[in-house]
Length: 124
Image (tube, rainbow, N blue to C red; front, side):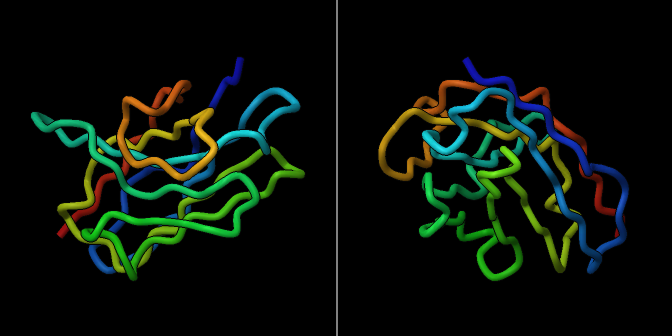
């Protein structure tokens, strides 16, 4: 069982930056692929970024590639999402998720545990 708690959301101006954190409980954090998803009002939850268990490999949605960076610190049981050059269309609730898959996965059905989400609002 893994419990995930996101933090770092808030209001930011377009072009600004924000770093989200997700703290995981338990001693098996390094066994999980970690991902970030987001959901805007009236839209489906969509994949943003994922990182494999050691942190050596990452993947991103095309919409955030070059602007967002996912990273993890297995010693601190924490995964991060650094968001730069934010746009109003990045406004959403951002969710952290953990997958027991061995390889990076990008579909929400492959993730076993979810955080409660943190709101990010980008003003124009």
